[in-house]
Image (cartoon, rainbow, N blue to C red; front, side, top):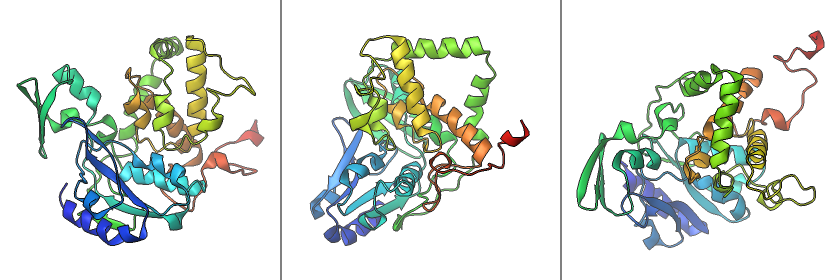
Length: 319
């Protein structure tokens, strides 16, 4: 990232007043980054910000409510912070937000499909145009655009939408709302039978690890999740597609009007189920009915968390 030193400078100035600042650092191999909690000045030197920093760090904030916490955010991450603020799941006075303009993050699944086994990565070199990965002595050069996450290719908010300190220059967004939902429209064009068969097939592959739930910054009721609840007893522990599908439907409904499309659910899935498509369908309908996008205005209330006697686009009195 250009101006990484500016970001480090902002964090150094703020850290004495904070319990910790959450960012990213190097992980177990050169192809991955990992969340990094900075509590001392020397921790800041280990900070990295590049296309490998995929995690949405906002996931940690509800568990740190009441502590003075700093967080480094991309555009999609910052929308999650805004959404948490809207729902009073975190306190604004406790959170210091360090934002920057993001040019996209890589999709590890795409890299695995191109390179194959990445269990022995020896080196990874990033530039503005390509990523060069050395695996078991063999070099693989991939155009960065071919490795970027789909959400980044159609991103409308590459800059932090809310921050206390912004490092570097803003990134110009070129995608439109329609660009971001072409995959949803293509799926909508399928027959009901085709759509149902697709999701049954995907749910059959699900191993019920709940990584999608655990990675989601807006999934905050984990102690009372329907997946584990026994009173009421919503789901069995059977490895049946019915229960897997039931969980995902409930998960998506709970995120309707709240999902910021950060893609953490899909990234965390160990069997690569395209679960973000499901969440985007709900967001598309929320935009159409309520003209609302999640995580843009800290003062707004998500449409399904409020009530109006008459909604402008719902003509129920005419029925």
